[in-house]
Image: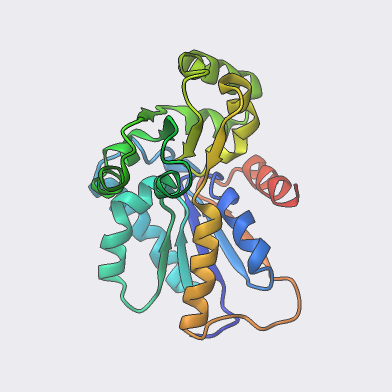
Length: 251
């Protein structure tokens, strides 16, 4: 593989931009192709077979573009399809996001915790293994049905209404919040408005470090001395999503 080739990153929408922002902090010179599958968003309410098919379509597109590594920035896709993709496409490294539940075990084990994730992630075998391995017995699993859609839409009023309706009951009762969907860091301030002072746990910084390790291990680090190029593709060709994506990158 060519070191100058891009890294492919995909999510069910623009939420994975929160992952890319963490990656850019430590790998600014790499080239990236970001695929937002907004036409099929959300993944959380789809069958395993559907998710595998959607992910495979995107992976084939990245392979055609000669991507040297693929980042699965969607927690649902990671939980449902990472293993399937790794077994089928053995010549390309896959780096998959995971809900940062182990971080609670490592840093805040004794404190009550709320895991916010999609229904698909919470019900997945991969997450359940993680949860039961590191369960602090003070954890609430909350499937945030429809929240990724509302965030994708970008309507602040709807976001605040959703959070107030669904999270108000947990105010004062939780100290940790695991952001188990890449869309959720985009509304961290709004979540804090409802829950009060909480500590957020997000897997994106750890994925970024792991990606760098994998690139070094495979001798794929791009040594160019200039900032890399970011290409954005949206499956529904939504120009507003493209605009918002690059606005978030610059924030």
